[in-house]
Length: 447
Image 1 (tube, helix red, strand yellow):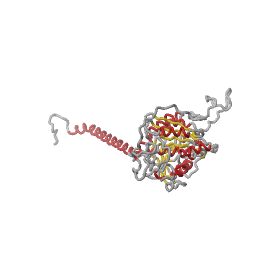
Image 2: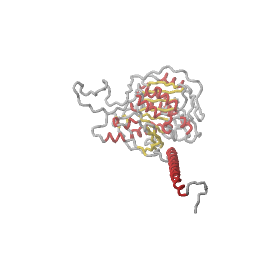
Image 3: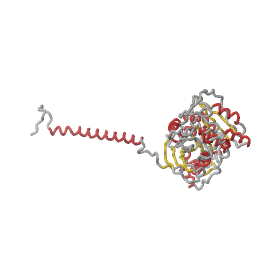
Image 4: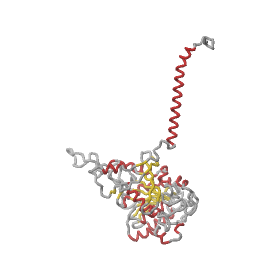
């Protein structure tokens, strides 16, 4: 016979079992809740680590192309080049808050023979139905530093380039550029000056021919040079400057940040003729002598880096005739990507947008005329406005604006992360046999 061990008139064992049932239910609920919370925390950690992420998934940029091609009433517009193919295979590497994405592919250049990675970002307007038949301007964005095997503009969206273009397009101060971000060097040990140095990989042909051909194969682009521009920092700024001056029939404008002005790779080995063919000073002189076509060069310099005197000297000597120049001085700006993106927000993106072709939305269907209305007018539209426009147009000036005088830059020289200094006072790490792996330190800072 079981007796209550307390012997104090407490509940019997049967009563205790009945009383324990709610407690057991509470314990089960608490245990289940704890397990659920643990699973949620684990899932969040797994997502952050990429286990359940869509990073690395295939990406297609053909939504608008498919929409346009299936619309019989939407023939290809004059000046618009629909994707020519062959289609590249992209994988997603990043997502932005607005849902746009950066994707990467590996390209083997048909003309250069060089194989390297390319990153691409397209603005959200590209997939809007109104722009399904429109071309978009391309901004080929070049990094500084090693520039291989990565391009920090593509692998480091935290530098803010894509967001600056998105914000500018929304505000009407920037065109919604397609950003194409290739590597600029062939290995981690050498700088190739974005050029076809005799006996070396043809990095000039890679950037001037293969990368644009890749963009034409995969995206809706303009057939004229008015839809093609370069942007670059440090050694990438040199490449941007040089390509626009060397091929003014293909590219119209450049934003060159903290840029080198003359070729200085040791790989030239004193080949003066080949260097002159890739020297922005010589190229500008030739373009002036030929009388055009007009090109637009926007220099960016931070007040905490050297090189301003070199840019200003170039502007004084070659900023005439068909060579239009502008200087964006970035207060407290340093020799890095974040400073240069700030300069782009503060004026450079707006300036370059004024000389480039803008995407145009399809006109809205004309509503039936009503008594008292003008035939063909849209209620509420301003005279001269473009029906269906989703952004404030950026007017194209006949002459680029002249910047206001800026405070003098500090005199101290600038060094890159690897400590090398180049001939014009701000190094980008030229030299042989001093490779630093994948250039991750420079990538992180966007130098």
